Image (cartoon, rainbow, N blue to C red; front, side, top):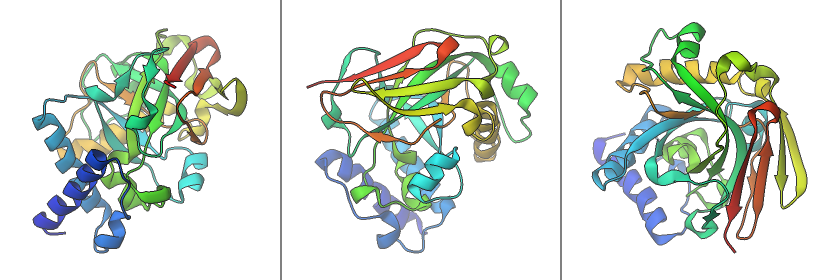
Length: 261
């Protein structure tokens, strides 16, 4: 894509946020767009958000589990940026109306203590860089009408990032086997899904390695203090005003998101 086309696609996505109305798929208006172009569109929006005063606080890996890939009709992971304005406090009311077509998914969030710079990052490097993990709920949202997304659409849409709720119980990696962490997801007091850490690329740490090695060649580092969401352990479930969502991850603790009436 030409630079102007990238800017035009970015402007349309930003307008969808401003108007609160989903738009037609990016790939329909820009059929020549590639995955590389989609990341350029994403980065153009991130520059706009940062210029407006927001701050990059981490990254997310999307579509890392088979369940999510099947649900969204794609066959590879992607990544997006987490901005400071996306973080919400546990148990405090969240305005569901501030998201377009919101869904929620449980994840094990990494909080980094050291910088990770790819390519060449190994599992050992990734483990050494993690300060602790916490249970998390990611609110995914789509500016694409009816979630009719291709891999190009979701990447351009900042990997469908919406919001993040972090639990408050930190756990050291040495105290847990992430592959074996089980999760139950309750929506409105009803059990809707179960999952395990192994659903995320075999282990969430593999998603962290993938992320560091994918964004490193683009000149992007994972910084100390950054939060990394490695991917959902279950399918994503729609949420609306009045919903309460609880993810219970056993020894890792619980995390609760409350959507205001």
